[in-house]
Structures are given as C-alpha cells and as structure tokens.
Length: 240
Image (cartoon, rainbow, N blue to C red; front, top):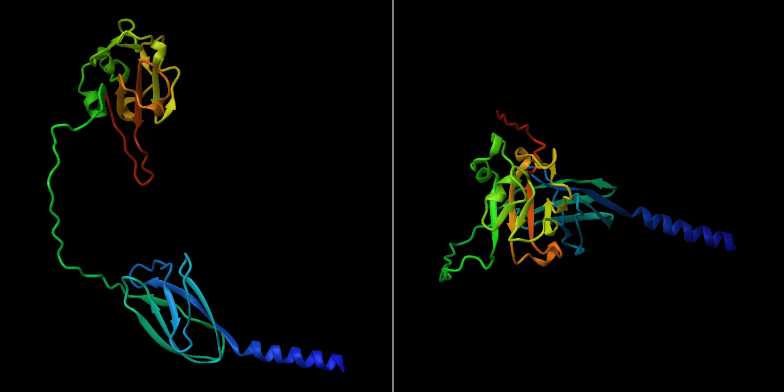
C-alpha cells in the first residue's frame, strides 16, 4: 500500500514537472552584436521576469501556455513577442539602439583666479622632447646630465652622472623609474646613466617639499616616467 502511494506521488510530481518549460537565450545589440548585461525579460500576463547576466544570457521558467514576452534595456527599443510554450525554447533577442535625445543645456560659471596656478614649489617637470633639445657632452642625450643644468643641482664631478641638490649628500637623492627605486643610476664609472632616452617619456624632479609618498630622502626625488608600450603597432627611431 505504501509503495503504491509513493508511486502515485512520484507520478504526480513527474507530470507537474513536465508542465513547466524553460525559455533561454541571449540578448545582444543588433548593430554590434555585443552582449547586453542587465537587460529585462518580463512576461506580461504572469508578471514573472528575469535579467540577463554579464554575457547577455537569460533563463526563464514558465508553465505550459501562451505568453507575451517584453524585452527592454535602457537606450534600446523595447521588443514584445508572443510565444506558445509547450517545450523548452531557445530564443535570442537583438535590440535596436534608440539614442536618448535631450534638449540643449547651457552651463555657465565664474572662472577662478588663475594668478596662482600651482602650490608646488621646487618642482621641475621635463618631457623627453625638452630633454633632447638641451645640448650635452658627447652628443648623447642623458637625463642624468640634463638635470644637472637645473637650478640648485650640481654634478659631483665633471662628466659624471651623479648629482648634488642644494649641498646635500648624494645618498639623499631618491631615483625612481615608474615608481621603482633605482640604486645604481649610472654605468661605465659614472660616465653614462642607465636610462635609455628613447624609452623615457618624461621626468619630474622634486628639489624641496617632497611628497610624503616618496619616503624620507632629505635632498630630492627624481621620478622618471617610461613610455607606454603599444601591442597594436611597431614603432622605432634612428639616431646618429
């Protein structure tokens, strides 16, 4: 008796499960084919709905019947489609963009006082183009020798790349390359620096009022920014 009752219950659940089907698919931009994440899929009659995931995929389970689906997304035309659901259905939607038009907005204001452009003091910023325009010994562009021509900076010796800022020790100069400390900034006994000017984008020299993020060096900070790579095209330069 118990076995018959259990079989009857399982049969009912099986029949009930067969009456529920799934609508699934992907929602994309009709022009670009890009997946639309967060698009709304709403069944008007039953007021049941869901939203597409990060890849534009959605899934909605409903009992067997005839339904009207409404698909909407901000900036796109809404789609309504009637379907007869008697089996699992794969249904994709491609929404047509509908740019939101707005009336003209006029923005006005009072310009601030431009007499004080910056509160930074004792800061020098040079692009690599500016560095290349400065004459140097032996004709080779060298940023370490270039900064020795700035006010308050002197060389430790003629032709050497080491420098002293306002009388402080050479060990009180912090040299950074894209934020990484450089402990040996020269080679060939100080005749040349380790920086290739073809790979340098620019540099910033702090001769006083050094920001706290650079630590406790007492003399100066030389922050060298390297050029960004380009994986889409090749570039090169020739010098003589």
